[in-house]
Image (cartoon, rainbow, N blue to C red; front, side, top):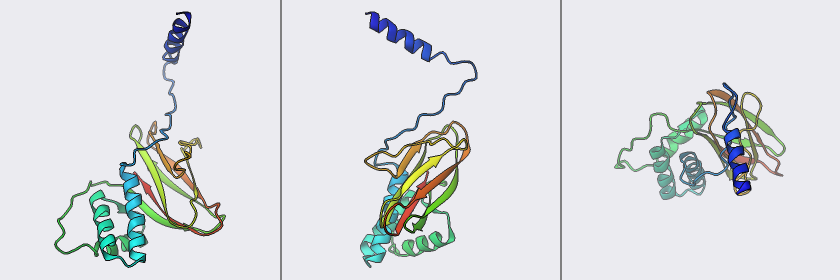
Length: 192
């Protein structure tokens, strides 16, 4: 009984923060496999592999998924590739409507030992996520930091290249990708 009273007092004290004090958002380290960013990343890798294998049926299936998900390329090169993939859809395919502001993505390649840094703005109070999927080569390391250089999520053992959190306010985040592997890494990174 004494222990229960102590726990209750601690819980009450924890809820009494100073006025105006803001607690940093705790990162969410697990993500359901049905999350949109993850589905986009998987469809991107599927489309690239199907195109490389010259498998028109698999490419049309991946292109249809990307169209349905409303993925938006961030670079002109990725836009050209997406156009080529969407051209693989049959002429009689049903039109699909995606969200007006779907997830954005980009493709990239990193040499062994190389690092790249990207910047993205995420809206405060809304779930944000980044998913990286490798199409060829080793899996790079992903680190996401907010404007105060705080790491917003930590890699988890089952998937070190996805990150989900809720920013306290709208701000720019830095995304660092490091290839620690022995060969080039080719990948897609999705922001949602």
